[in-house]
Amino acid sequence: MCGIVGYVGYQDATDILLNGLAKLDYRGYDSAGIALVHNNQIKIDKYKGKLEVLAGHLEGENRPGKTGIGHTRWATHGKPSDANAHPHPSEDMSIAVVHNGIVENYKSLKNELIENGVTFASETDTEVISHLVRSYFDGNNILEAVSKTVKRLKGAYALCICAANEPGKIVAVKKDNPLIIGIGENENFVASDVPAIIEHTRQIYTLSQGTIALVTADSVELFDEDLNPITAQVEQVTWSAEAATKAGYEHFMLKEIYEQPDALQNTFGSILDGEAIEFEDFPLDKELLSGISRIYMAACGTAYYAASYGKQIIEKIARIPVEIDVASEFRYKNPIISEDTLFVAVSQSGETADTLESLRLATTSGAKVLSITNVIGSAIDRETRYAIHTNAGPEIAVASTKAFTTQVICLYLLAIELARLSGKLTPEEYKGYRKAAFDAPEYAKSAITQNDAIKEIALKIAEAQSVFFIGRGVDFCCAQEGSLKLKELSYIHAEAYQSGELKHGPIALLQDGSPVIAVCTQSTELFDKTLNNIKEVKARGAYVFAIAKKHMESEIIDEVDDLLLIDDGPDELSLIPAAIALQLLAYHTAVALERDVDKPRNLAKSVTVE
Ligand code: M6R
Image 1 (tube, rainbow, N blue to C red):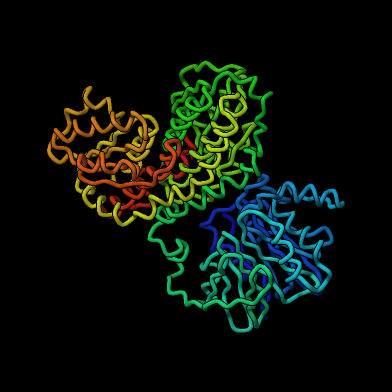
Image 2 (cartoon, rainbow, N blue to C red):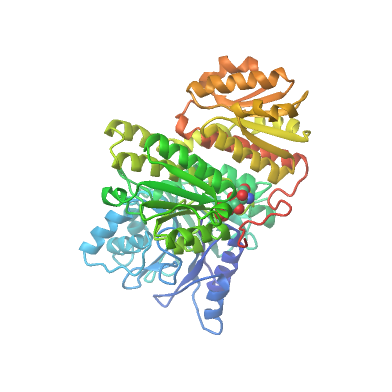
């Protein structure tokens, strides 16, 4: 999730842009840059690395300019590098663009521009915007040129654009990515988020979907996509600067839980292209597939549970055998890996030492190595030949949330693409599975909207000494992930069991009131089986909280103490809303126990040691 800052006013813009970008560093970034407009020229400075690198290059330099745009980039298309850092200029340096989001149709636009003789200087999707604006720009109509450009773009984006010939103007565009305008006195600001501008003004416009803003030092004009003027309410920011970094949420974890529908949407941005599933950095085709007879996945913690889901879904839909291992075990077990193995390393951070060493081992054993990571340019991303990026945006809370659900959707898309290529699906079945992926963000919401009800249940769980999670099939993966979330956040002992395993030992631990959380979302025979297991634990006095689907209500309601119903979506993806419900449960339990939710004791966000 990139950060955008824009300034137009009476002061030199450089420091305002750098300070604003520094306030957005909680969003995560790997490169930074600014563009200043002065004497009808645009001057751009942009570098890979932290803001200090950019500031170091600017030190002692005279960079006049009272109009400017700045950006911190979180790599999506193209690795972190000076060239891929924003702002991106047009070839003649008459236009500069900063962008947050993903241009889904950038490939076709890029081809069109190349055919028209444009030379690209970066690997980014953003650069098509600079060249398109330039192609519509006749020297004094930046607003119109931007309006024509955005009509050509598909995807989610927030943009801030300036033109050499029109100093004193910034054009800002918002579509599915946040953007605000800060209103000052003889100066105005644009930013992705309030912290960037809060020291200058608390008066803001939060741009609504599809708004184009023309910002000068003493005016802010708002338009719809066809440049019809629109109005908006000026809001007064009442948050503290610290609260503003969390967009008003009490914790980063809660913010990241709520971001999941958007994160899932962003994941599609670089994978689903029109009718096809195309992994940008993984050219999966029949030829590549013909050299793969089995898949091996290794990961740690939450990423391992995503891999467990991946195993089930790939074996179910594509019928390719998949083995999985916790990465710290894989490394030392002399695993059987050969050239016909596709090895998949799953990792949010891309820096986890055990996962990194596992993929090194797989690489030296001759496997085809693919990574699924959230951080482009991370060690794991760099060291794998093939890559799928989850594009969930930075995850700051130690507990993994949106990384998990976006890993799940990537593995699901991988499964259906493998199945299509190996002829396991009819075109109709493939279409159905693919559509289900598109519906996943809505499916996710069916848990998020029940936050209040989950909070009530969390108050009961907060009193427990020990909690059992049960499920079958992919519901068991969910139970495992729910159990990990609860223990790492609340410090309550929790264990996950396959529902049918309980009576082989663990059921001895149950007594009156022992909490059992049952995940039963599979509309197959697994539902009846888990229902029987619920009856068994109820008979031993357990308190049962179940997560099921709406259509199951009549069969399950009398068997449990508390019930949460998610929408009737496809079984293959019910893990997404069910896991989100368990994230919220763990979150509220931890809050009730006054735990350090974003930084639980003894844990680090990325475990870079063995
Ligand atoms: O960055 P990674 O996905 O490789 O991290 C793996 C685990 O360390 C991580 O998922 C950990 O289990 C989280 N704290 C879970 O919330």
